[in-house]
Figure (tube, rainbow, N blue to C red):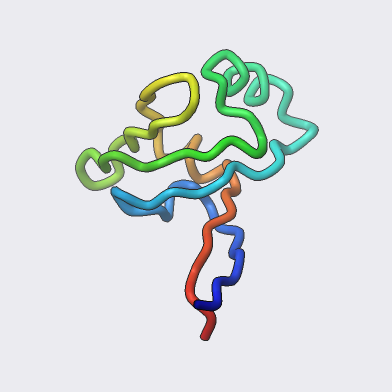
Length: 86
């Protein structure tokens, strides 16, 4: 089976989807610190467990546990997901 890596915002993942976190924007030190405290680091694999309501937070499981991430934060995080080849 052929799979292609595709970068997209974490906020676009659906419950049950798993992806690898991409690089954090270098200019966003506050975001990097917040994510590091949750052990959500570049290269970590995360799974979206649930999406709370329309525009509500995503429940995301990573190495450090389960976290509720606001949509605006999730939209700033690039993830690499594997999708079937066209």
